[in-house]
Amino acid sequence: MDTKTYEEKMIKSYNNLMDEFGAIRVGRANPHVLDRIMVDYYGTPTKIQQVANVSVPEARLLQISPWEPSLLPEIEKAILTSDLGINPTNDGSVIRLVFPEMTEERRKEVAKDVKKKGENAKVAVRNIRRDANEYIKKHSKDEGLSEDQASDFEDSIQKLTDKYIAEIDKAVDEKTKEITTV
Image (cartoon, rainbow, N blue to C red):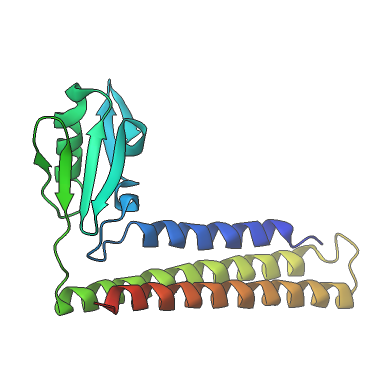
């Protein structure tokens, strides 16, 4: 039995969580908050980073310089309709996003959201473990595995589960610390 396919699924769950964390606003400008925002580029949904240069000239300011000036209104519209919660300012050549300082209440809200996302990722990892264990129980006789081999497989899946849950906990702690640090 090979644990590789299950480990790949666990890695995907972890990477998905890290992508979600990258999109969380923490009061400092981070170009990754734009990763999920799509711009209508000649009828094709396209990431902002693929049609513009995104820079961080100051700690709480993102500057978006589109390669084609005609895209300014499209980028502005995409940001306004997103869940970013920041109003873009358009000066005719660039779009600026000013990130306000987060209030203590907002920090607690975001930290709670981070913990919830972490919990969801851990549930996903545990579901992968459950799927692996069910698979081995159903197919161990078909594949001619002894009870010891099946038990070894379950042990290695449990070790992988423990490893990725620890990684998720570590990522949640780091992100929570980043959010609550003023």
